[in-house]
Every structure is written in structure tokens, then in C-alpha cells.
Image: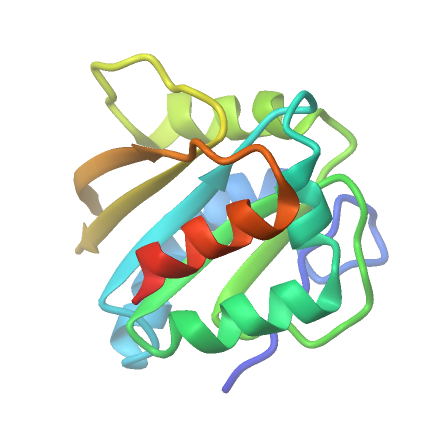
Amino acid sequence: MYDIHLTSKNEGVVTFKEFQEKFIEICKSHKDQDRALCFAFILYCQRDPQIPEILCNSNYWNALDEISGKYITVFSIKTIFEESPIYNMVSVSSVMKPNNASNQILEKYFNLNVEVLYPSILFFQVIEDKILNPFLVPLNETKKEESFMEIKKLWK
């Protein structure tokens, strides 16, 4: 497995701006290395505190990372960056609110004809330099444990 650490600070391996520019390349390299067949983006906003509670808790994060396995790479934007190994799930720290950062990625790469409901998970595939078959799955649970179980069911 290959560790990827992305931060919004210059001390990190990749800044948020660089991540935006290299997003497709990251997906392609995961696919070429047989690390992923498809991809997902966890989308949420500040009014969904259960999602960052899951993403910033290393126990939940590690469980989701293991469950996602080698068939899916999961991206998320966190406002707090924890120093821990990150494998198939890729966290991007940003000084922006998570939904504003997500919106920049969505506008640049995805041609969605639907309104994004937060929180949601956006699934997609990457073939060559193109994003194909994006579809949104809204997350309905509002409590941390129930939200975790809802996400967990989507990975299986």
C-alpha cells in the first residue's frame, strides 16, 4: 500500500490546490496500480457534525479504510488533519469549509445535473482522463454511529 498525505499547508506533500490539479492523475494511478476499480467522494457541510466526527476519529477512519478494501478509493475533505497513515481513503485538509472545497472539485471535474444534497457520497469511475458514471447517494442518518453504519453498508 502507498501512503498519501494531503494537507492545505506548504509542509504537506500536496496542497489542496495541487490536489485539485492532480485529482484525475491520482485516480488514474490508483487504477493503474490495481488499488481501485472505482472511486467515491464523501461530501458534507458544517451542519452535518456526525460526518467529520467519523472522518476525524482514527478508529472510524481505519474501519472505513479497511472496509473499502482495494476496490474503491474514497476521498474526503477534512478541516482537521490527523497524522496517521492513509491508504485507500484519501483525506484532503483545507482551510475552506468542506462543502466549499467539495464544490470546487465538483465544478471542475463533474458535470452533475442534480443538486448536491449534503451529506452524500459521490461514486464515479475514471477511464483515461475522463470521469464516468457519477452518481450521488444521499446519507440520511444524523447520529454518528448510525451514519457510520450507513456509510459502511455502501462500501460492502
